[in-house]
Image 1 (tube, rainbow, N blue to C red):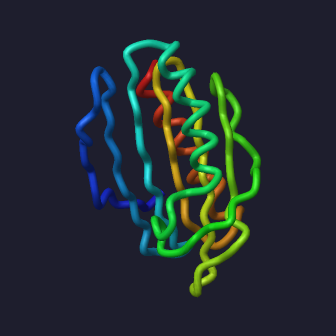
Image 2: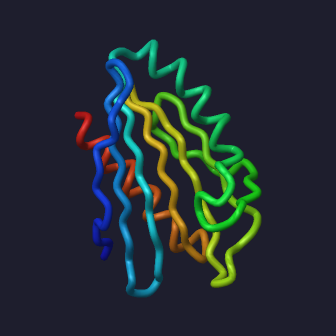
Length: 139
């Protein structure tokens, strides 16, 4: 898909929670950026509980996290997950980019993926590719 990983990082977890995130950039047209956070919980029950918090929390992301304050609305959730929620920013940055956010759970794993792009046709394949790669790793 033409993305380069720019920021791989393992985040110190709390207790038995493992966290990692990476940022991927694509400089060629169509330009896009993806930020993927993976949380691995000790069991499905812990993941189910935190999924609700994560899904609700990302409806209103922290101010300035993505260079602005996105006003999110519900978007089309990805399929094939145990649970999935999606949001779409209604506002665009000065370059015309907007943010798509996916929060989904597969077993004891929660993924929070943000894709920044100019239109849905460019972003949808990226969202699907991220989900498919995570699914492949969990098989």
